[in-house]
Image (cartoon, rainbow, N blue to C red; front, side):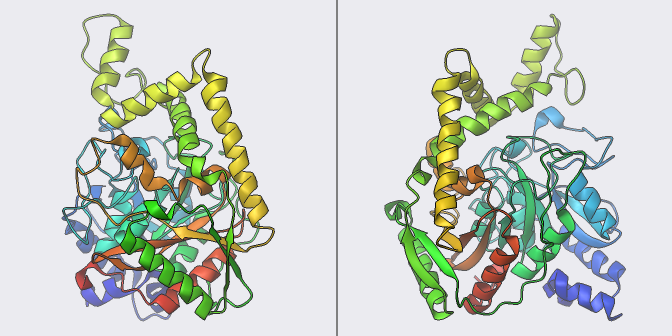
Length: 464
């Protein structure tokens, strides 16, 4: 019976619970047992008993009162927050229970989940490969069947890219749709919470519980139109833009082949395709890796060994204690980004780097705004490749950063985007990204649902 329960989407299970055919406690217990069988290092913490309510896995970047919250970093090892993030609190109020805290790249800095201080998460499709990052634990848990759904964060692609590499659905909502209060900050003008689920319907369901304005987060606005369950089964009357400067040569041949097949599927469903120019999108990676590290260097200055988190042993003055705490507490990638960001903000370089990057960001947002005057959506592959091998790109940061080539522009523009699984290449899942104008979540979910039904992807690694 437990195995049958794990096959249900959350929407299906909820319907059975409402009909009296299934108890919430029984459903939660089944998932608690499944999570206990985690062999991928997808979880960093799990409760002793089954959660009280519909179970949801929570990325370890969300503060939960009295629960270890590390953001994947030694510098927060053992830290138990005195308060709970608004996103998690909203889930609790909606009747959901915390199934566990999931693994992640340290402070959400990474595209492979190899930067966690507590070891990498493995891809359930091939345990010699990465699950993507930084929400790799959340994505792997859902794909492996040790969580029914999960929440993650997306700064430059950290929900969408691991969703693509693990063969599930991942959505980055419009910036401000969900409160960031209690979500440990990486880059404050980019960070956004979102759902990782097995199908589009569950993504809509979870988004509806998460969204909303929060007085504790002045950047939150919520969604003007409450998320509804998608029902559309065709794409008639919808226009899809394919960026003309798609950098097709940078896409793996197998990924490109599946992407082209998905474009053909859109036309079969009645959608219209045409090329569009996004002339500044190709500079997104360059702008992102100035803006995000600059904001990170400011946000991470609070970790000094004085107020909370680890404190290194020191026989010297407070400056030495700061230095040793940060040297021992932060990992290599976090140190790299702090140094990049601090340099970009330093006297004499601010305008040359950070100022120019912000201007590029404005240009990218303008490109999308122009495109959406003529099109409903912009579509791309989510990731230029399928999941790569563990350790394959750790020695080459630039190669690692390029994994976010297709996801970063949407983050810089603050617009919503979803990744849905659209097929296999090398027996590994690929992702298809659909982006729309700000606050177009319902339209994106409708289109994604229609395409999902037509593709009929079997999202189980067991069937690979």
